[in-house]
Image 1 (cartoon, chains in turn red, yellow):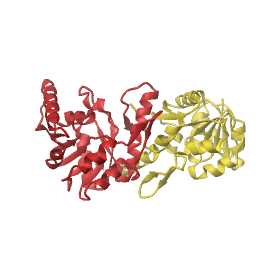
Image 2 (cartoon, helix red, strand yellow; image 1 turned 120 degrees about the vertical axis):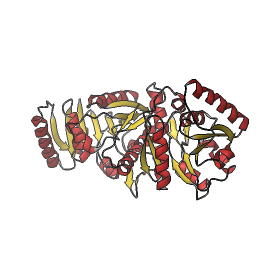
Image 3 (cartoon, chains in turn brown, yellow; image 1 turned 180 degrees about the horizontal axis):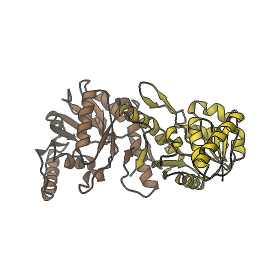
Image 4 (cartoon, rainbow over the protein chains, first blue to last red; image 1 turned 180 degrees about the vertical axis):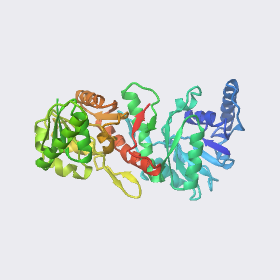
Length: 217
Length: 217
């Protein structure tokens, strides 16, 4: 399976690529293809040093990361989502994963959804209707993705309206470290999932913790 | 310390009373004082059967549960919050705890906040400004409160604008079973906490689980 990461050279994208590369062909997308290739070479070095085996792992444009992939992960900040997606096509029939959280840091971290109700619902409105969108990975911190010595023992709620796409995304989630996927229901539930991330950032801030995650139990 | 429970004969109120009675004087409030007394007698029987020691544990009107208490827990459904609070007074200088979640069951469970942004912020607008309101206990299921044989190994986010009241509420949280209180920041964060409960209900529903809780880690 080929997984393309739009925004793959950002903090979260880089970590996701490192964690997925041992199991999948990974295409790291960026606005700057040369930068994507450089990050990939660096990541390949990291994986080789650790003795990890990996499949194809290459840098590309964001468009190639979409066009060449079976599954596309949108590892982009909410504020860039509209501009990025308006510049890309070929999402038809792809499974698309949104880990995007619309939030702002004011006095505290706060959930600031778009008029659609959530980033995922807004992104759905920007994609062709044949795209099979799910939200997942919303609450996993960038530092945790990159900390390859640490197991990720977190729960991951997955939302989506296409049941078979959701099953595929849950399989991908469950293939990473000790992440455990939970079906959170339709894409409309994504607002409640996306609101969790600013809550976790507040929990970290007010309790002097770092990179707080969650477990359902 | 005297803890009054408004709505103390409801599902959640009854369980909270059972869990708090070994540590605090508990006043179980109800619109129907005779019903509150009957529930209390039943709960006292349950505690005696278990060999639990407890302080004063009595049934009363909701107003007495406010007037006689140092700390008031609003164990009421969101839909009853306005009518209940408009009929009560003497909240001045009390610590008040809102575990209230504004949500609806449609196709799935969904967070439906009032115009203030959260139940806690709406409740603040209904209380005198001297009341020291915090939100807490939002995500603990009624069945879990009542299952006295089970430890409650959950995380509890606590929100509030009065720092000393928040510290007191966190102490109360930490005194119950294995609950662990986390400072979630100001009362404005309560919207993100309240949205967690419908998410947990969706997780339970779509994964065939019961009474799902959370742990921050």
